[in-house]
Amino acid sequence: MSAENEHLFILKISKPRKPQGITESVKDWKQFVGVLRSSPNLNGDPLLIQQEMRNEWD
Image (cartoon, rainbow, N blue to C red):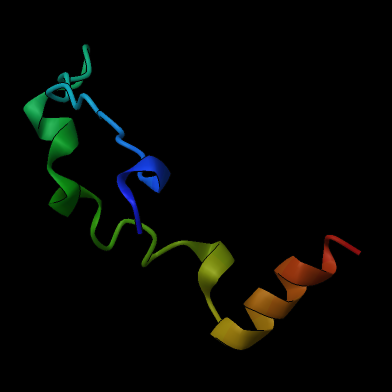
């Protein structure tokens, strides 16, 4: 391959900015673990729940 067929791309990557308004407690994902465990909407066979949710689209 000759130099005539080569392309040069320059990509500038900036530092990610911290989203404003998000506190450290919100970023802690562990606070959400188990939240839906006692939900009455999720009791029962997981496969049947999934099928019912899909059937809503039909």
